[in-house]
Structure formats: structure tokens, C-alpha cells
Image 1 (tube, rainbow, N blue to C red):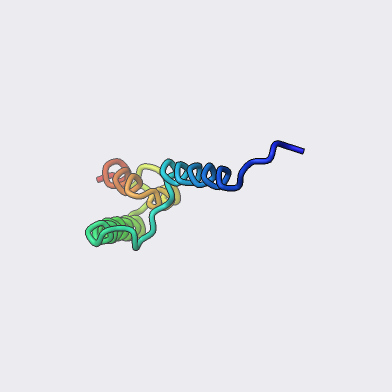
Image 2 (cartoon, helix red, strand yellow):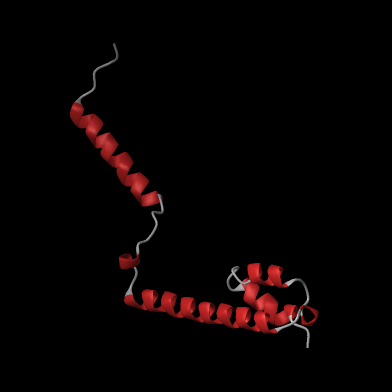
Length: 96
């Protein structure tokens, strides 16, 4: 058998360990944990990148393949890499 420990000592040790674990671990934040300003900023940035992506896809559908650097399929896939894909498309993907 082992050395018997007092229940109070064991509980206190476990409690301290749990508190330290909660302090050091970064649990994911929930939407309701964010301030109103943070929620609004996320929604604005999301709306802007969505509009930019839709504009990019609309522009891609209207351009012929010879007006692009690279394939249309690659640019469609790049459009989902927000906002890097859209920036790359408008900076380098279109010809004239």
C-alpha cells in the first residue's frame, strides 16, 4: 500500500494545480466574451473581405484566360486565402 495522505492536503494541492493550469492555458474566447467594439470590428473586417472576395470572383468570371497570370482555377482557390489571395490577385494576377 502507499503512504496515506490527508484528504485536505490532497484537495488543496489539486486545487492549486487546477488554478495554475487555468491561468497558463489559453482557452478559446467565445463571441460573448468579446467587447461590443471587438465584435463590431470582426464583423466589419469579415464584411469587407467577403465583398472583396466576391468582387474578385466576379472579375475572374468576366476575364478571359489570356488576361490572367496563372489559371482561373488557381485564382479561385487563392480567393479563399483571405486577404492574401485577393491582394495577390489585384497586385499580380490580372494583366492590363
